[in-house]
Structures are given as structure tokens and as C-alpha cells.
Length: 212
Image (cartoon, rainbow, N blue to C red):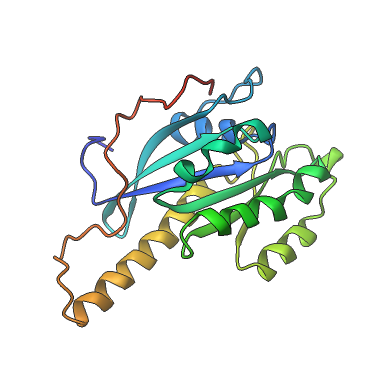
């Protein structure tokens, strides 16, 4: 976008899943088109932003990334607060990371807004020869739990753009429809009302130091 300060909606998206599934590289690939084989586990929380256009509106995504290790679970409530979308990520080549999806989903349901849009993401699709999680199995799990589903590769960029575009578009449509319904109900929402907003934060700020 021409200016990172001009946007119609600001949506907070969180990345969750086990450590090592590639959450940080999904974030860096989408926001900076970067990938690092050397990336270390994220310490604490960090975020990055990127704006896209949907139906002529500028949607600014503030995407939060945190470590999957148990010792960082104390940040849970603050991490989920204000989130309107979540990418629940597992590694297609490591079945235990898929088995833990149910636990992450429960945590999400417990701490996030009940209307949060969730996408199940099977990352590292480039590791076809090491696949341990059948696509159909994950797709069925997603369908049964009302989740969107996609397989991505932060390494070769496959579907990374599409995954974020899809979840942001879905959130925008939900918010837009609510605004229309509220307007019809004579609710006091201006035509430019931004219903889903997270506090303005410096794009380069980090709650704690961490790697990308």
C-alpha cells in the first residue's frame, strides 16, 4: 500500500500451534516475503503488519506470533484479546503437531472471542516425501469443527498469500454484514464505523525480544 497509516479496518490475527511448525516463517513470508532456515523459536510475542485490499477497502492485518512451548502459555489471555482471526498451524510431516491441534483449538475457544474466524493450516507442504498427515484427514477435521482449511509452504511460498487473503476477506465480510444489519436496525454506527479494531501500536514494537 502507498501508506501503511491509511486503512479502513484493522484486524488482529493470531498464529497458534506447536513450536517448530513454521508460524514465524509464515508471518515473515506474508509480511516481508522473507524465509529463514535459521529461524529460532520465537521468545514471547511479536507481530508484524501488512495491508491488503478487499472490495475497495484497505484492510490492515496485525499478525501476532508467539512460541508454541508450554512455558510461554502465561501470555494466553493478552495474546488472544481482540483477535478476530486465527491461523492454527501444524507441520504436515510431524503427526504429533497435528494431534495437538485439538488442544490448541480448545484453548482458542476458551480464550478468544466466540466469533473468531479460524483457519487450520497444514504447513511445510513442500515436504511431500515426508508427509505424515493426510490432507483428507485434516480437511475432514476442519469441516467437523467449522474451520477453514489450507496447506501451505512458507519455504516455497505455496498458498501463504492465499491463506491470509482468505481469512482477512472472510473477517471483512462478517464485519461488513454486521455493520449493514446494525445500520438497518438503526444502531448508532456511522457509515465508516470500524467495529473490529485493535489498539494502535507501533508496527515495529515487540512485547518482548524475539526472532523472526
